[in-house]
Length: 83
Image (cartoon, rainbow, N blue to C red):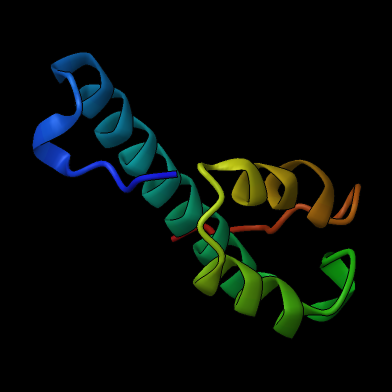
């Protein structure tokens, strides 16, 4: 399969790529922030593995969504102290 350059992609394709990249970056930032605020008991699976995967794997938003839906232990929501 021949490589396609950016200039050969139609405008709708470019827009889709940009939207997916922004969505992935936003979800990844949210998931990493949430992971940083939780202790090990509040996470399903090892925190180091989630952190490494969220930091390295580009998944079009799928991996951060999996963490946010399944990686957090049920009934252990982070509590923000009142000021």
